[in-house]
Image (cartoon, rainbow, N blue to C red; front, side, top):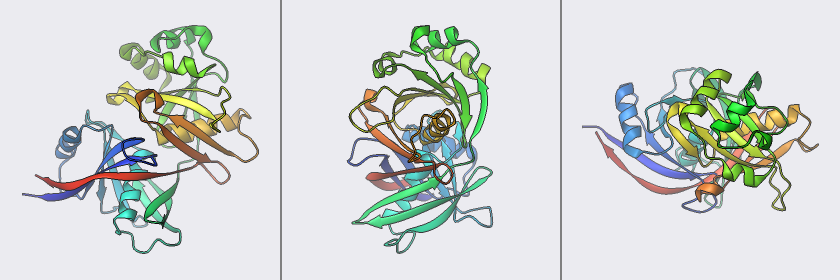
Length: 293
């Protein structure tokens, strides 16, 4: 029997039971992919991340993440951020009273992450991949129908697939209320995503608001069996790059995205574009224990 340590951490959260919960399993290098997927189904979270020994010579840790449906997902989002915050707060990375840099292996990519612990709380800044701007959605009426919206709700910039590690279709609507009224049809949305070459759909509004938030968003990813996600770092990075390409990011080159409020799990995601695409945030460990296999 194998004994593996696990934890659940609420990512992009300042207090427990908010943000996006992530299950983390330490080890599992010798487990088959079928067992890794079964463990992810057992936790039944949006994603479960396994912290493994690196394969790449210049990496400190290798991370593999699976959804509850068993799909492996890539990119440096809440799946990676939560794992590093847990490693830091449980003392597995040494003294972090000053910020230190580590390297994470995620799929074929090896990306830097900078971490600091202050007052017992860890914060991390992750560099995502270089933005790539891919296909634009061609059937706006069909896309609106798939999202349960009216065609006139969708506005410029035109919907487009952008990636910094995971390919997501970014769809702008006029108002926050338009984001909240979306009722996606999973099969229709699947068809739209396949047509555009996207994995998930990030629906957002830039309607001005007094809370300092740049964009208010919801995320749907039926391609990996994820109905709705409360904080999606692999979509936040592409959205920041997308807005920047259209001249919608201010001179500070930083944005704040609010996500998860509709689900009762409010999350704030910070993206800085001054030197690459950098995603930052904190989290709260809410559970820890031992997994017996």
